[in-house]
Structure formats: C-alpha cells, structure tokens
Length: 87
Image 1 (cartoon, one colour):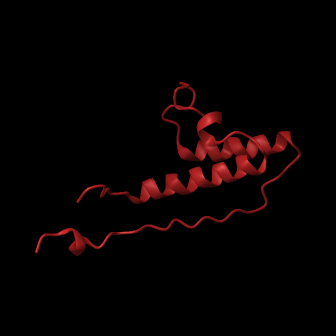
Image 2 (cartoon, one colour; image 1 turned 30 degrees about the horizontal axis):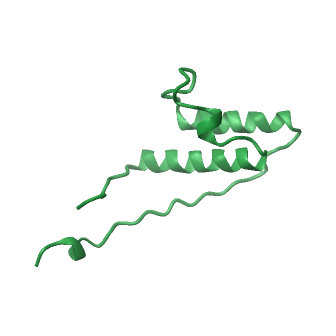
C-alpha cells in the first residue's frame, strides 16, 4: 500500500523526544531542533534523541528559565487496508 511505513517503539520515543525538544526551544524563542542541532554538523549527526532534549534544557538555564514539566502523547494510526485492496 502506498505510503505505509512501520515505526518501531524506538522511533516513537524519538518522535516524542524531538517534539518535547522543539516545545522547549519554542518556549525559549530559540530556533527549532533542525536549525539548532543540524545533522550536517558532525557534533550532532547520529546523536541520540535524548541528547537534544538535554541540550534544550541546558539552554533554558542561559535565560534564567526552567522546565517544570512536559507531557507528550504520540498518536499513531494504522490505515484500514480493505479500502485499498481489490475486490
């Protein structure tokens, strides 16, 4: 089926960490994760996703801000295959 991809649990964890990182950066009026931590920079290429959220929290200390709490929900959708099959 066109566009159908699998996303293992580790991928979902990455999605959540990236979303939380972007939320922290946005709250601090900083560039988004792709601009601040580009994968074209050898320092960030292949880095674990938890590295980015730790760096975002570290940036919050520069502005006398603090992250008190964050919540993320990752919603996934599995398409109904029967609408794409031939009868």
